[in-house]
Image 1 (spheres, rainbow, N blue to C red):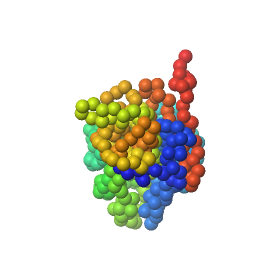
Image 2 (image 1 turned 90 degrees about the vertical axis):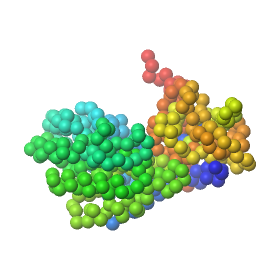
Image 3 (image 1 turned 60 degrees about the vertical axis):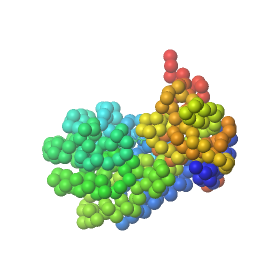
Image 4 (image 1 turned 120 degrees about the vertical axis):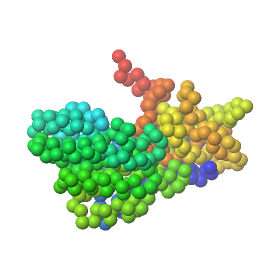
Length: 403
Ligand code: LLP
């Protein structure tokens, strides 16, 4: 791939960023994030949904704040994410709380904050939520997450909307949950939710899922909202990804004349394309079978290639000639530690900077210190300005909590 795509991030040159902040480095284009949020919202402007950013994609405060200021809501899956969402300025009544294993503590935090809805995933969870809400003295607003049995999404690890996965409850059980809750003053049914999976590139599964959610709403209503979850895919291969305009065209007709508002929970679609992982070439080596480019970022920094065989585009920042078929590998002691396999890159030298594209979602957020590697620095670019928003971890951070 040519360098021109990777040469700049927003208004700043990638090599300047690498030189100033060091590598590996996560760099985010704040203007692009704002632009993507606005495009998504504009696509639905005839019937504005609540766009609840799935914080797990990237919980960085600097990014969350941008979206909160735009008026976005937030989808959280833990007490930690709830605390981050509140600190970033998301309005509590725009926060939904998902996840198959919420603790009592987490339920209490959600009630205390006054969130929009708990997305409940089992009878046992709903029973516990009722007890916690009873003690708390405030009814718990909830939506049942149904498992609509629609197959969609990319890799097997991120398919969720089928009965063989742990997520949600089947529609028949959902109806029973709503009926029982209707007699329970500690609970208030406000919505119905589903999440089909991730990296979905067609609007069609969403249309079918919306029909399933509306059938439930008809049976148990009135409800305030229907929540289709996230999963909107991006073009990791350079393609356009799921078009929010096409999604809106497919969904809005079904909502005509209906009272329920629409909630969506995109994570990847908003964050992935605005983030780049910059790394530096350490060594070149080859075996009789392959050429390797060893870089200073590894699977602890970006796990997606190792975990899902994800293919992120990777590009040399400095324009150079030639083209070689290479594997880009990290320093971690695992065979799976690669960033790209079998890709064409120009002739490289140690010290060259490479840009791994579309790394803004599930990159930093799934990062670890495996092999005792401090987490990288993260910077936010707005206009021509780059600002450090998470400092590079120091060696002392590795042992900070050890006694
Ligand atoms: N809502 C719920 C309930 C979810 O479980 C998820 C993601 C989302 C929204 C946001 O999905 P998105 O729009 O980002 O696809 N680590 C994997 C993705 C896991 C997604 C988990 N749930 C990856 O790197 O591909």
